[in-house]
Amino acid sequence: KSLDTNNPTILTSMENSITLPVVLAHGMGDSCFNYGMMNITEFISSTLNGTYATCVPTGDDRTSDTLNGFVLNMDANVDVFAEKIQNDPALRDGFNAVGFSQGNNVIRGYIARYNNPPVDTFLSIDGVNAGTAALPDCAPSNNMIMGRICKSLMSTLSTVAYRRFVQKHLFQANYWRDPTKINSRDYKKNSQLARWGNEGDYTDSSLNENFAKTNKFVWILAEEDSMIWPREGEQWGEPNPANPFDSVITMNETRWYVDDLFGLRKADESGKFFFESHSGDHLQFSREELENWIRKYLP
Image (tube, rainbow, N blue to C red; front, side, top):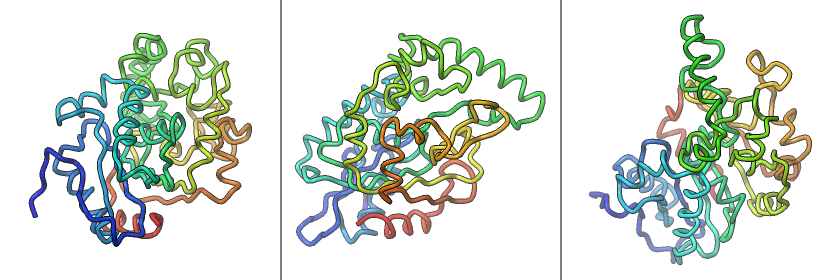
């Protein structure tokens, strides 16, 4: 059947469905109104025997939805996302969420700041939840010439990324996490990612309370990801603070986890965490892999 690209919701009957509805969030440069996301939404619905599925845009058409993934900051995207969810009667009793790339930041932000109605299962595919410390294709292991170019670009970005004006107007700056700046005054004061992770000077206990409302988290990593560094951040690893550009530490070694800054350790110890991976680069998973994750984890 043809897809209505003016409506990113797959309208199905919920009368015979025992599965919670599914909300999708798209990645950078994409839109819920694009055929690809419409197709994935329909595929997830059909995989779950006609379960209600909707891709929630943060703009009202393809252009604004795409642009808002750049020039509308993370908090503002989350506010729009939350309003649309709370206005959808089909989602009033909770839902499962599937995120792609930076769309996971929107879902994670919703969980952190709202989670009402609650996300039951969060399936994060190649997510930038822990931020990124390098530009695409600029991992520290790159060749010497590219390394010098990348180092210069990233140094410039880190100089401005945590300024209040930039944090207010650029989505990608919101999840930029330079490991050499995480103890800086500007990062702690202005970074939206720092605020969501309780890394700043002010601690918000509601972040932990909201994180605990979600029953299952599935963290999926791209084994050869060149868009996000470190790729281990897709499963909450981070650059080693003692030697950030030479080694990476796992989730259990991070301060987020050890000090349980926003509920990461509690959720893991409660058996809520599941880990998967796929071969290839960023979002280069197969249709069969997506189907397996959906069938395996979405109740």
